[in-house]
Image 1: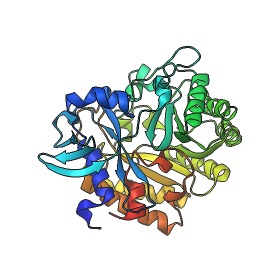
Image 2: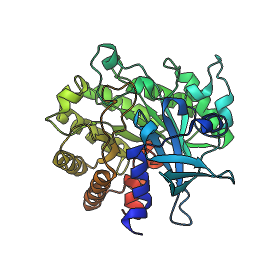
Image 3: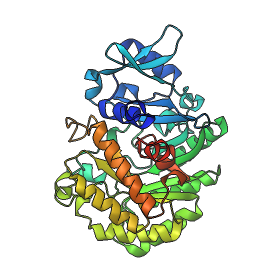
Length: 376
């Protein structure tokens, strides 16, 4: 497969450019398909795998402001199928996930389940346990972050609502694994404590693999205790997210989180490896926020030497973020970084294709797994 029409290329282009949605399609997409946050600029598309047994490949897109002027636009054909076109030419076929029935259900306290957790790829559910971030509250958010606008969600959702919604999705047959993430809170656990408690509630209702995302804690013993509890509560995969390796911009881009020393992340990653094992520990890095590519590659190497894989995601400028007007990274840049990162993982005996839960298994937020599977 040549570089111009590969799955990884198509996915990287869709995430870099966004997709223009014709106004006449919006209501149909929201009511019939998995598009609960389409009106706030978020949609999940799926591409067909180039392999017969490959299934659907999810592409999570945050359109932000660029969607309205993207050369990529969605078309509904006369036969009722959907395609992506570039100007007046077809670019690729797409498949849309049907709207889950649980989206139209209410939790026990009458909150729509679609405002508690959402499907972000085939079999993959994601929920933000705490969506109100202390960094935002004090006026010093990470400048690429729009967690409080992530989707049209209930900002004060309860853990019990999340567990109830996961159970509904599992019983419907549309949820196989779950990502639990959190904004930073003022608690000693900085939000990880709530993620662990939520995992425990979920596993009291249904058994399935869970991924937890969090920032490291200054209290090393508390971190180890919470990770051990999380493991017992059914968390199989973790991502302690550094977001940016470039020391020249970390304090500017992340005014508070950027003060956390890299050494603190390394210590946290080692604890994660001890508890969750090889190929189940990750860190997210956002590409396209002003960093130098050398810092990314050096950081990936440093993390890999500790047994940690870096899940590279392109910066998708989201409405509500300080950087909402920033240009996203190009597909060419992302594909080059993905290819070089996969080479580093292989050199350290790491395999990004074997994660058991969450955003890395689902793969919708990045094309790095597609590069690992199919090449560029």
